Length: 260
Figure: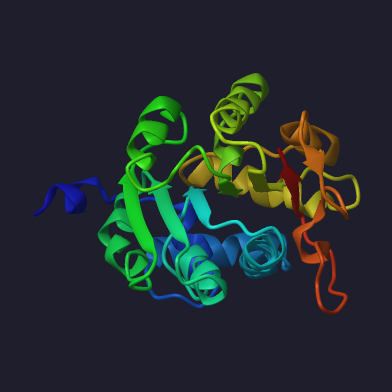
């Protein structure tokens, strides 16, 4: 058994594997599928969040590469490889784009090779690190990214795993402070919203049975991550409502993009 294998716990459901299941992937186990089905019973629309979040990623990366000229992406909380990963979207627009992925999930690490197949002109790298290890992430990412030039910090569905509000804000602020002017923050977060009470039941079930536990925040609390940045239109909204080509129903995953 490899060190990676020994770190993969198949006895408890894991969020990355459940999202993989909801998006039609095969990198999951029976315990994940069982939990995913139970959560969908509590909140039938929750499986759409993963799909909506992935589509938001694609729209945001394309916008930054095409319209803002961003050529560097630091994607923390990468999750399992899927269709249209950050480097695939960015390098279709700009083949010389550089992408560094960061995750501490051993299953993601085991599949990291799929994240490293980029264009010959660009570069991709993968770091096995925790979001809280800000200094270590920045030091290792600097081997691939030029921090004197703008970087897009991608934090999709990852700060939800930092329970303490002030700690989570400090982490995001600490990374953004290290990035050059013209850098962007792309962030999505599970929302607590009075119009979506069934989400609370699904989150409660997850926190009782799954790992890692997650924290919901209000739209106003999510907007605080963008303090000090220019929040781009349409602001912090359902990720399905961030510049879609066609109108789509809101989901309880909110997102925004801000410019430094």
